[in-house]
Length: 427
Image 1 (cartoon, rainbow, N blue to C red):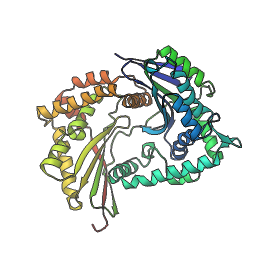
Image 2: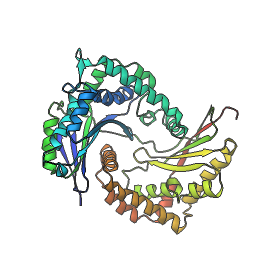
Image 3: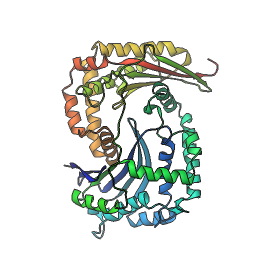
Image 4: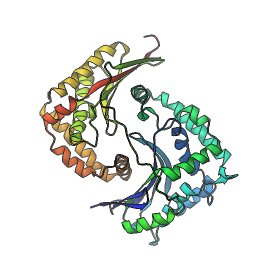
């Protein structure tokens, strides 16, 4: 049985510790939470990759690899995520749990030390980031940004949110844009890094057999060089309550063989902070969140209008986003049918197996989170960004009590806001 605790190590620096002996490895992450902003998103996304190239003590990948080998082949990876309108950048680390060390040695302390060394004691050149490391990681990040267009399904979903939230922070990509990354210099990146260390809320996650007090002590020591002040910015997320009078419709033509239809709905301000959020969560699943959903069973399987069709919920932003792949000439038919399936949910037209099957799928997914350290860390990071303390088990318990009427009432709040269609050049 695992125990979850949360404590503040320094002002705005929080540790969530999951005390468990379920895993043979320990999992540790340190994440800086900053407001998602068009100007800073690119530089912020670049920082962990540049830091991972080397520290003052281990100035290159070779010496870092040797240090990780000494920790029984541990791993530390840079990571960039987006939670609501918060950009989350930092490192995730996995290493052998102390309970399995061959000679009974402590691994937690040197692992925490190495991770925080990468974060706080970077390899510098003339008082700023290394020019070579900065240039190399800029090229890599620009490649990643450009490569997003190669996965048309993900690209269509990204374009939908850009159009839907063009005047909101949520419309900014977690990696930033090519122009802002290209403009970065070692000096400007160093300045942004210092600002991030000073102002970002810091969220630390640990999962393993070590006692939480010992974990807290190890991290207080490892994070000692971190600037400590009261200026850390709490994550926020603006919620637009209603859609516009008419849906925004955007079409784009490319050399593609399959059309991508993406549709964005506003939830009437219903988000993860509201009492009836579990009903919206289940309504999204019944609509398009599982293989038992109306979109999958009817639009895809029965009517063969889509190659795929699914719906996802952005819990902090109050958005339901539908993603589908269609033949170019099926655009209107598929769009109408997707809306018709939503209307059925709004009217409460759900077979018992649809409702219960979706409920069981969601609850099973929440419970299985507890068996995967990475998924559990990602769940708790999302909760931290939202300022929530509800565990996967507690949320699952709330889902158990949701009625058909509550699902229908939550669905009734959905309004179509934006439609994005990626079509072929000949259409």
